[in-house]
Length: 574
Image 1 (cartoon, rainbow, N blue to C red):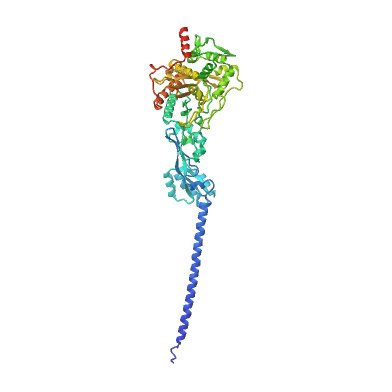
Image 2 (cartoon, rainbow, N blue to C red):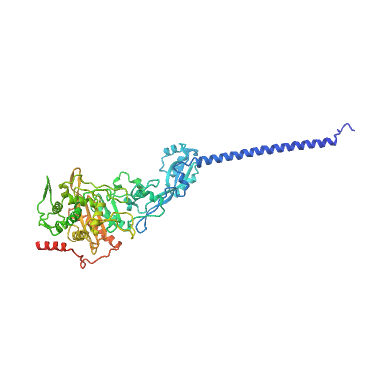
């Protein structure tokens, strides 16, 4: 054996190799175990973070006020409203609304600055405070346009989200404002049909069909607007009804408003007031229709009975006269066509207070009318019905009713004496009318003839429309200012019916404080303003409603024997 070379047995090499291999395997096993632990730790951390994000942004982020965002339409989807011909009056459009989860927002100041650049209507300080509130749900903006939504999405602000929303839209703006009403920002009905049928509109898919006709509504509003401008009036109102069914085809109250922008009405609260259903007015000589009908129903005299109307009637310190002054004695028919206050009083006193009250009660003048909107006012009448009340009520003073009540009652007078309830819902042809008989058919026929003569030769001449047999009655009432009537300040009205030989439609026009103009020769009574407006409305809607015109020169409606006798009495006297 050489001293310079160490001899290592072969067995030693085998033992050393085995130990290294064993150690290497142990190290590899340990490394795998550590790697597995690290991997599991990362996976667990990822799961924890993911759960936390879901918990914050979805589970806790959904408060009671917006859980319905998961629904494609939310819970406030509303059915459409259409007119009698299926034309759209109100619908809902899907929009996007912006909200925030303050728990997720990182930098509230930066987020507010970015949002106000896109939505300048947001208050920067208020927005910062909202985003700092640590609340899981905060409304920031409602009903955004797609462009605004896209701009905000590009900002990529953590904690800022969108949800599908519904916005109520009224395609015709102001046209049906007082009938349809409006909804709040959460799509709940707050006025008109929207409020009255709120539950139906939220639960039904089929449209709500009204009795209105968009064409007739346009014509009525156009002429009322022109009349307000021409006579420099403070407002106006009108209603058109089918006397056979009680269906309302049009209803307008001016001033009106845009239900798409209710928040912009501001201080103009008068725009929300529906004069047709909410207002209660002394209707003036229009009440002579009821006074005369009651007189005929009482059977104590006839339309040929003559009354002396030359002397004024004194009630205490007040004196009641006729305007214009009527000299000769007049028959009942002439009292009506010439609109004599003195004659009306004498007729009413002969009928008596008790019968007058019973008749007014039958007409519904002592109770709030029923119709499918919430904005309905109650009539105003004295608790104690004195002899003076009987006198003044005969020519339309001392009792105030709504224009809706006036039209409903007159419609009953001319509809063969059958009064139907007014309705804003379209009736099916198979539906039977649930009206009440307020006067006899014979009285109804005579009243139609009298109303026709008012337009042909009385105070309603300016409402005449050739070949459409228009009849009616004008009414002019002074407006109360404090405890006294203000002379020259009038509420004027004209009720027109056509065609009078077979009454189908009734039109009421009201003008609030019209001014006398050159064309009216200094007068501001109903015959000079409300009547011509009614005539223009009838000339526009009669063809739309397919009313068949007649040649009135050749066509004479059959007159009752009483009416013929009244004419004979007049002819003999004159």
